[in-house]
Structures are given as structure tokens and as C-alpha cells.
Image (cartoon, rainbow, N blue to C red):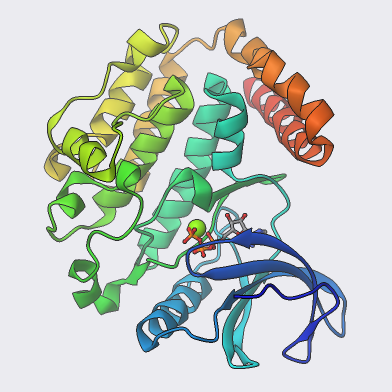
Length: 322
Ligand SMILES: Nc1ncnc2c1ncn2[C@@H]1O[C@H](COP(=O)(O)OP(=O)(O)OP(=O)(O)O)[C@@H](O)[C@H]1O
Ligand SMILES: [Mg+2]
């Protein structure tokens, strides 16, 4: 679908400024909401969208509207204009976690755990409001000044729509999907907990727990193989933190944390037990030094966004320690 030109007036009140994302569902633009002039992000479904896609998009809007938490993107409007459905949301200024992981590889332990706490808080809130996200992955987490924010409730189900949990059980990204969903079994809150476990493993270990050269291989690995122990990849990770990740990644949901809130509690305990070594802080600024240097020269604007986040992350870590 042809992208909208900057300056286009969409739906009488949104002046398009630039494209900021192109996902599976549609395009996302930075826009000005008239007449007050606030900047928003507006996600547009294509004109040729099927009834199924429209229904899913509407569900995304309703799921997002149920939420009121700093870790969940806020929706400001939903409707149809120029034969396209749209969702207008608060504009999040920062990179996605996927972009950051691509640039830096593993993160400092303090940053990885901060992001995980933010995410678990957001997911616990969503679960409390009857919303299962079902597509928790680094590309759906944005890192902004106030912390990590979960976006894209495009695959979410609402508690009252229980029949939808089974339908489309295997949509999502194979690396982050819980084994029970890969097997086509009904899934609950613990499937989102599993996805957070994969993300935490990836942030700490610099690689995903289950890898392969095709979706099929990744799924087979997730279903049958144990992940490489995290402390083999990164010895300074304590046993308590490693155990939290392992439990979140349990193949049997009955062996996993029963909820995001339970995992958050266990993470807090593991962090309290762990004497934070100075190395965790210094690795913030030294992580992948050459990659960052390359970024400064080749992509100054992305570098600036990443730097803002890294600086902010260090600050939060210090504030937490004090
Ligand atoms: N509120 C927002 N503020 C700023 N950028 C956003 C916002 N929401 C989404 N984006 C950008 O647009 C991209 C796509 O958004 P989103 O994940 O919601 O769409 P999608 O079509 O469902 O994507 P996919 O199917 O690929 O996961 C995001 O990765 C992000 O870069
Ligand atoms: Mg997405």
C-alpha cells in the first residue's frame, strides 16, 4: 500500500508527519492531532483489509482502551476515515527493544532486569483487566523516558472472548511463543510469562534460548530441548536470577510462574539476594563499544535515541541503588 505523504490530512484531524513503522497489520505514522496540535502515533489498516483483519484491529483498540498503566501504550482515538480503520495512540519516543538488542547484543544486567520489571508490571496490569497480549516480543516493546512500554495488542484476547484463545493459537513470532500454544493447546496468562522469560534470557545472554534456521527448527527446539544454561553464556549472572529465567521458560505451564505478578515478585527477591556488582553498571557504557562507535558515524539519529535510552537506564540504575 502506498505510504501517505507528509502533510496529508487524514480523517479531517490528523496531519501526517512521517512514517515511523511498517508492521504486519498496517502502517504507523507520526501525526499532529488537530486542532490542539499534540503529536500522536496513528496506525492505519489498509483499504483492502478483510473483515477478519478489521475485527482484529477493532479488538486491538478495545483491548488497549481497557488499560491504564505507564507500561502500556495509551490509545487516544479509534475509528474509520478514507475507508481505513485507524488507531491513534500516544507517540512513544524511543527505540524498540528489538532495535536495541540488534545494536548492542546483551544488555547490562541492571538494564535487562529493569526492562523486565516494567514489562511484568504492564502485563500483570493487562491480565488484571482481562487482556492477554499473546505477542510479547522485543519488537513490541518500546524504550522511552519513563521506561519500557508494551505496544501492539493486535493479537490480544479479552477474557470475555474466550473462544478466540484457541483460534489463531499459533499466530505470533515462533521464538517467543509458549510451547502449549505451539502445540495448539489453550493458553492463559502463563503464555505471556513465558514470552517475558524468552526476552529476559535474550537480554542477559545476547541470544535467544531456542534457535534454528527455520521456524520449524525453532519450534522443535522450544518444544523439546532445554536452553543453554544462562551462566554458561554469562557467568556473572547469579544462580537466583538464572532460576527465575528457567522457571519462566518451563515447557510445562504448570511448572511456570502462575502469573506475571508472581514472576515479578520472584525477580525482586532474586535481585535483592544478588549483591549488584560494579561490573553490571560499567558494562552499560562499554557494551559493544565498536558497534556504538559505528552508529555515531553512520546513523546519528538512531545513535541519539539509543544514547538517550542508555543514559537514562544508567541513571535509573543508580537511583535504584542509592
Ligand atoms: N505509539 C507508538 N509510538 C511510536 N511508534 C510506534 C507506536 N506504535 C507503533 N510504533 C512503531 O510502529 C511499529 C509497528 O507497530 P505495531 O507493532 O503496533 O504494528 P504491527 O503492524 O502490529 O506490527 P507487527 O505485526 O510487525 O508486530 C513499531 O515497531 C514501532 O516502531
Ligand atoms: Mg508489532
